[in-house]
Image 1 (tube, rainbow, N blue to C red):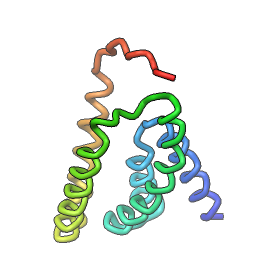
Image 2 (image 1 turned 180 degrees about the vertical axis):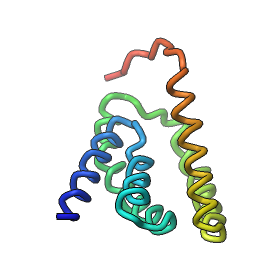
Image 3 (image 1 turned 90 degrees about the vertical axis):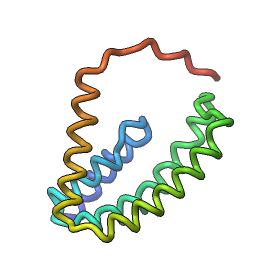
Image 4 (image 1 turned 45 degrees about the vertical axis):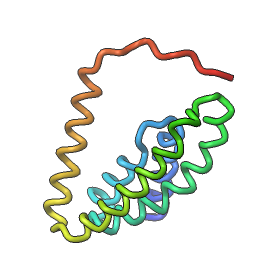
Amino acid sequence: MSWLIALAAGTVTGILSAFGIGGGSLLLIYLTAFAGMSQHQAQGINLLYFLPAAAASLPAHKKNGLLDRKTILPAILAGLAAAAATALLSNSLDTRLLKKLFGVFLLYIGLRELFRRDKKSPPTRK
């Protein structure tokens, strides 16, 4: 029965990831708060989950002209360097501190989104 819940969580967060909503963050919440995993274990699973989820949604974003080619390579290189450095740092932190930092991050993002004023979004290119 627990595999059905994990399947449902993966499906929902996959759908949200395809929309760019941050399904990986929600998957981390599910894995730590409901599945009882440590923060470090949940991060590892989330990284493995993210790769195929991103690869699956990439063709649709390319088709809709949502990829800025000038930004892609610098963003990838900076993201790889930051991910490697932060993974090393997070493994040296206590799990309780890591959970608290992640909670503060989620609160900040949630409050920012709650009180954000919508700007006109540019039309999508096809």
